[in-house]
Image 1 (tube, rainbow, N blue to C red):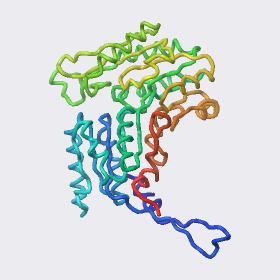
Image 2 (cartoon, helix red, strand yellow):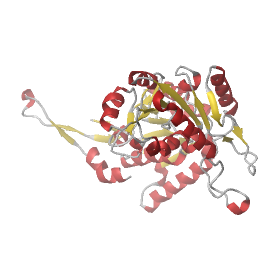
Image 3 (cartoon, rainbow, N blue to C red):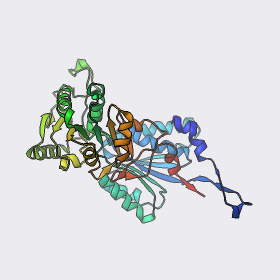
Image 4 (cartoon, rainbow, N blue to C red):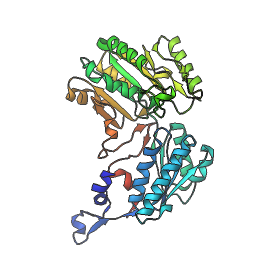
Length: 381
C-alpha cells in the first residue's frame, strides 16, 4: 500500500517516448487504461495477503475484481472481503467493485473461461495453475501465475552457524512449512553438515505445536512455535514419502509422523521433521512438500551445490548464506535458476515491494510487486 501511494500514480500516468530522425516532427506517448473486470484465484496458505495484493492493485488501476478463494478459507475470506467493501463505501466508492466467489475447484472454470474476465491472477499449485492457464486460452485471457517452489538455501563453507540458525529454522518451519518461498532444501557443505544437522534436529524437537487462539486456562500452552496444517488430507502421502526416503538411506531424527493434540481431537498437526542424507534426485528433494519437513542435503563443491539447487523443475526463490556477501552473490546467486535470491537471510525479497516477485520454470510466469502489479491490470495504447 505504501508503494502504491508513493509511486503508483507516477507509473500509471501517460509516458512520453523518444522518436527517431524520420519522425522528428512527431510526438509519441503511452497511455495506460483499465482493463475492466479482472479475477484473482488465490491460495489458502496466506488467504488475506494473497487476496489483498491483487485487490489493491486492481482497484488502484481502475478495475473491478472478482476474488475466488480456496474452499478451505471461506469464512476468513468472507470477513475480509466484507471489510474491504465497507472501506470502499466509507471512501465514497462503489463496494460492488470487489466480489467474492466461493466454490470448489472444478466449478471455477465458469470464471476462468469467462469472456468477460480481462486478466487472471493465480496463486496456487502447479497442477491447478496449468488448468487455469489452459482454460484462459479459450478467450486468450492473459494470466499471471505464481506457483509452487522447492526453494534451496545454500550454506557456504565457514558460515557462522549461530548467527543464522534461527533464520534457517524460520525458513524451514514457518507456517508449518506451508509457504511457497519457504526453505524446502537446506544444502550444506560437508565440513559443517554434522554440526548444522544436529543443531536443527535438537531445535526441531523443542518446537511447541498448538494454536495461538486458545488461553492457558483452557489447558493449552501459553506459547506455540508451529501451528496446524490446513488439513490432514496429505498426511498419508507425507509419511509415504518419508518412508521411501528412509528406505533409500535418508535419516529422520526428529518428527516424521503426525501429532495428536491433547485437547484438539481434529487438529491437523504434523510433527516438525528433520531428514538428513537426502539424495538430491529423491522424491523428497524434488517435490514441493509444503509441510514442516526440513530436508538437509550435503555437498562438496560450490559447483555441486549450484547443480543441486537448480536440479528441480521449480525456480521461485532461493537463499545463500556465507561469510562473504560478494562471494555469495557472484559465486552462487548469479548462477541460480530462480526469480529471487536472499543473501544471508530468508525471503526478504517478499517484504520489499520495490522488487518484482515471481519465479521461472514450473514456478510460473509474470511478476508481482513494484509497478509490475498494477500494470498487469491495464491495457496500453
